[in-house]
Every structure is written in structure tokens, then in C-alpha cells.
Image (tube, rainbow, N blue to C red; front, side, top):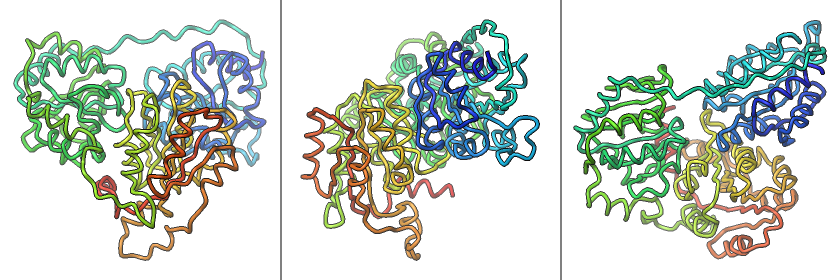
Length: 541
């Protein structure tokens, strides 16, 4: 077989999940080899969308996502999505065709290794027919074991070479890294001495929800998550929801009142801790992480514990004596029950001539849409409404590809998540700017027959800039009305324009069935004067 065929077969046997891409002459054969090996493939309409689909698929499914692109321009088109995946430590492999050794004057020739490294991805290469299998296994293990996005460059001359079809060595999963006994005892002592402990779980805690719940119950700790781990404690009565810019007033009050804050697989960065404002001046801070470089990277900590979150939580629970009341008092329980969600906070309805209040809209959608859902959110002034107001059933029900803070990734995120979880309704929450940037992928949704509702929060502009630069000329960031519902219908969606709550009857009718096509909700929203999370975010700029 050729090297291209060997690469595709090897990745399939190693156990990669779905592949996404745009096929050109350079990646035609390797993509077909993946498909022949049983790996599903989605043809996107743009490489940028394909990259984010692969990223979201990996985050939602827990399997390695694959992106396949043409040499040169195919890779550069995908670069924003690759950067997001790399910054978020998504286990993903980018199969990037590359010019051959003799094609020094090819217009496709760029330094693809340097390009990958410049955005934080790992640059790997299939060097020859003789090393091809080892090169692929090395790239796969790097992606899985180090949770890295790997760009595996495939020179055209090497792809075409003949290779021996030897057996693919199994990549055995590594055992969890257990924390040291001294660190376990130190953390157990801190928990035992805390009166108001709070656990904040991040991406590294996904899969460890049960162990953290058990430890929190024994510790008397309240539970919260970073945005990317939303849903981890969805049904827990002691859950405060998301910590950071999206936090409810009650969550901010209780987290900032903690005397012990433990970050579990959580970066404790400016977004999750509101630039440190959610950590009280006398609070003890602990960080548990697999990556030694991550501990203390964003703020000083009193104790760093190097270890797998699940293993560490289990070991600390075993070292902790009997249950404690801690922060779990009747008064706190009553407050969480009464004010634990944003929808519990009263608001003045802004619905009027300019459109529907985004809070009113999102609360209604939360009630109308099935609870078994996956929510994918783009970036912009609107993004806190779906993030904070739409319930998700678990940590697999929320996908936020916003490590790089690029708008326009939300629709592709939803597609990747929908492919990973076809059993759930996928809700894509977009702004008008991001929706129009990515509109070509609406065709991908209908072509794949995905169960999806696309909600476009349309404020007729780039709302973040409109509100951030109040008092200055906004002409560069505002736009006339666009009939986004008509665009959706053109791609095969059912569509409705929503200006007021009564217009949502069409959403209820779609939910009731038969749902022959995906639904696009074009919501013309009233101005909120600038969102609370936006004001918080811009403090970091």
C-alpha cells in the first residue's frame, strides 16, 4: 500500500473518532483511506469550519478528532480553528498534506511546521515510508497522552511511496497519575479545617464528577465549574453553576466568601475568577492539575497538587475523616434553591420596537426545547444568555470553543458536537456577526440531517464593540437589518423571525414535530446596554 493508505489505516486502527475536512488533491487519498478504515467523514464547506467541527467533536465525544486539509492554503484556511483547539489542549490530529522535497518553488509551499508551532500546536511529520507507522503512532500518542493538537504533515512524495502494511501497535492508555501521599494529606488537612470550602472544576475535571461530588459531600463544599466544564454538577442541589463572568450574583457572593477554594483541573484564570475578585483576601487557594506548568500559572496558590483529578479526589476522600457541614448550611441551601439560576433573578423586560429582550427569549427557549440537549455558543455580547440561561444535562451538554475568543466558530462547534451526540438536540447560539461569517455551514447541517436549532441573537452589529466604545462613532460595527430567516430557508431550514414572545409559538410547533428540517430562530433582540460579562471581560484588554 502507499504511505497515504497506511496513515489512514493506522489512525483508524488506533481508534480516532470522526474526521472533518475539505478534500483537495493533496489529502484526497489519505481521507479515503480513513473512510475505508471505518472512520466517519464530514465534508465541510470551509476548512475553518472543519477544524472547529473536529475540535468540538473531540470535546464532546472524548475521542480524538481528525481534521484533514490540503497543503498550504488548506492549512492556512483552518488556522483559527486549529489555534482554538491548541490553546484549549484538545486531543486532535490535523492531517495536513505538504509539498514534497523537490517542490521548492511551489506556490503551495510554506513552512507548515513553523506555522503549527506558532499557534501552540505540536508539529509532527511523516518522514519516509520506512518510518511512517512510527510517525503516526507518535502523533496519536502525543494527542492522547499529552492532550495536544498535533499537525501531522504529509509530504506528497512520501504519501505516494510504497510502504509495508505491517501491524499497527496498540496504544495502551496510561494509568492515571496519582498524587503524592504528602500532597493528599496536606489537602485533606486544609479541607478538614475549612468552614466555607468551594470546589471549582475545570476542563481537567470532566469525567471526575462523581468523585468530586462524593468528596464535596464529605467536605461540606459547594460546587462550581469553569465555563468549559458547565454541566458537570448539573443536577446537584449544592451546585452554583458557572464561576466567573457568567456567575449568578449568588454564586459570586458565595465563592468570594469561601475560606478555601480548590481548583480541580481548572486554570483559575481571569475569566473563571473575575480577575481574582472571586477569591477572598483571606482565602486559601489550592490547585490540582496533571500539568506541573499549569499550577500557579495564573495566580499564586498555597498548595499545588500534581495528579489526575479523579484519582486525587478519591485519595483525598479516603484520607478525610467523617462528613462536615462546611458551607452546606440550611441558609445556603435555601438561597441556592431560590436564587441558584440566572432565570431566578428578576429583570425588567426590554421587549419593544427594537425586538425581544434576550433574557425573555432565552428563558422561553429553555422551557420550550427538550432538556436532552447540547448547547454550543459563539462569542459576542449575547453569549452569556445561552451560556447562563439554557440548562444542560451534563458536562457533555455544553461546548464552548472560546479559548482564542474568535467569533464565527459557534455553528461549526454545534455541528461537531451534533455528530458526537446525535441522540440529543443540538442548540447553536450565535450572534448575527458570527452567523453570517459561518453561513456556508448551514448547508452542512441540512445535508447531514442534523437535529439542530440555530438561534441567532441579532442586534444588527458587533455588539461587543458597540457597547465597549460607547460615545464613539459606531459606524464600522453596526449594520442594516438582514433577513437571516430567509438565509436559513435558502439552505433548507425551517425558520422563524422572533420580535416578541408570541412569535415563539412557531418554535413550540417545531418541537412538537415532525421536525423534518433543522430550525433557525432569527431573534431580533433589544439592546441590553452592554452585558455584565462583557464589562468584566474587557477589564482584561
